[in-house]
Image (cartoon, rainbow, N blue to C red; front, side, top):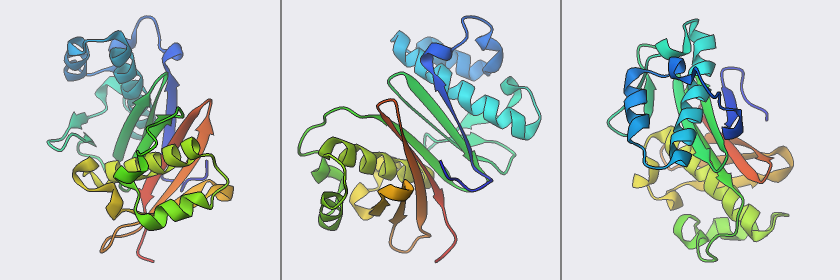
Length: 210
């Protein structure tokens, strides 16, 4: 995946999680949150995502993973308190991924499985539906790719789906595995993506004014 040098990401498979010692990688608050998740799958996904983020940031900040100052903000996003770093975490199925950057960044990973045939009506505008029809992708891959790109941008913007995905104007370049997303009145977002073992991974980062 082609990314600017200030952006790093790490993917953790649930099958790679350590059997013991992982408690040393989490904060006390994260251990409390982990204990309250009902399903084992959700616990493992949360653990994998935090391990991905903490090990990435530990290398940049030169501190042990458990001492990385991750906090959950009131908008639900994860902050790295007292540092210039931005972080985003996503998980789906058997994978979790974290991305860090010195600028707003968002990451999303989605499993490529059949979705409701009318899903596109929730997040694509008319011009984007025409654009997707022109790509050399089947419907499921095209819809899931566009969903992952838009969700990555919404996470980078820290609005989530409080902002309608239809406000994000998407253009995809499959050959370069990249996309551009524009929101009226805002800096544009670039996105790099790749396909991994039946999953789509998208990382969005904010650009300078063009």
